[in-house]
Image (cartoon, rainbow, N blue to C red):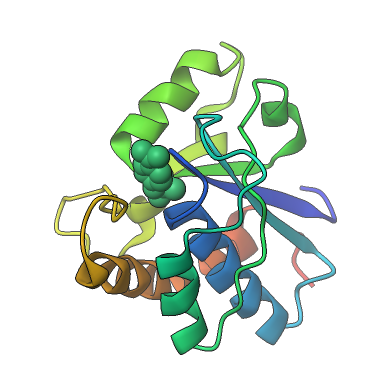
Length: 164
Ligand code: 4NP
């Protein structure tokens, strides 16, 4: 247990799914007045979009729900595993890429699939990659992220934070 919890959402490009998860989760954490205890960030497994703002389509979808996305893309590094208490992969391929660079000593519970917290996952644990699709894909990503963030926060409160 530590006083400050650091979590990171990780997708492929760090311009669609993980920045949205960062923005939505940050908003939830703020509303619950936990923003001095939980630090939220995101990254990509690739370096393709480093320093880019989130994709315009993702920003627009988020904005329509009252969430501003302002992160800049960065690539997840092996050393980052030391910093984070919990790393959440947005799909199975992101998880596989992270597992490849993870130290062998990494405790299993520090690297998880984001949708393992989705109450409606129906066994599909991938947040679908919206990058090459149409507007509906971005809305779908939003719906998955919105319903998955509250159970994720419950997990963090119960398992990673000191009780009040
Ligand atoms: P993300 O989506 O992993 O959710 O940020 C993608 C962004 C960019 C690309 C693929 C997926 N790309 O091929 O550049």
